[in-house]
Image (tube, rainbow, N blue to C red; front, top):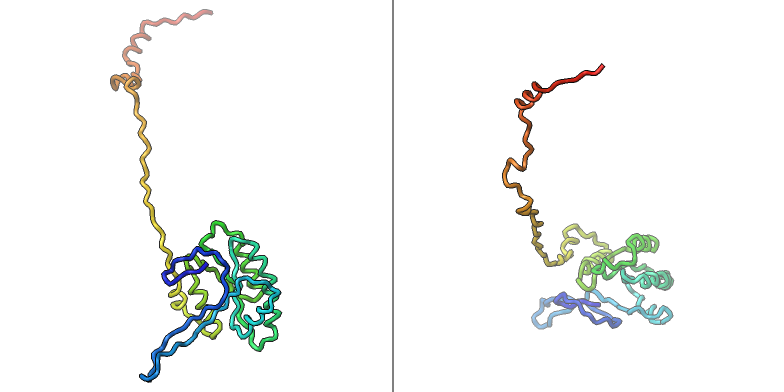
Length: 223
């Protein structure tokens, strides 16, 4: 999975292999000489080849950094890293200068399908002395930031907060406004409505009538 210059993701799932060079063109001070192309970064992508291949040592020779990339949705790709890390470190252990190792979890755009927990990611990075990163090759989220930080580690440059924030991409998302319908009000039927206010309220007894009735009443006592 790769992104082109227009930040559009390619859906071609074929295994990638080869190298990519990042160059910067600089104008020459001499008018008689053409502009120069300064090669800044060369990235080798070995496409998950077999560990038994003899070409692995050739790819690693002179490397300043080694990036172990796995799929956060596939636990198998994460479990296979242990053998790769052991193999790579066995080849580079006698190098005069050890390369920087980085653990990169890809497909963060599919967080809802994650199978590799974050604590496992951090634990592997800590135990293997690696820098930990998360990216999304599909959306481009944190890809530039990841490579900038790794380049800074190689050059021994401490990046400022402004440098780090400049590579944070803003993901645009559509906003949907939903109208909330009011629940229907309960209406009394015409048959249940009282004909008048007087019918709906209890009528208190008249105190005068109570006094008159008690006046004509008699009490019979039987002994």
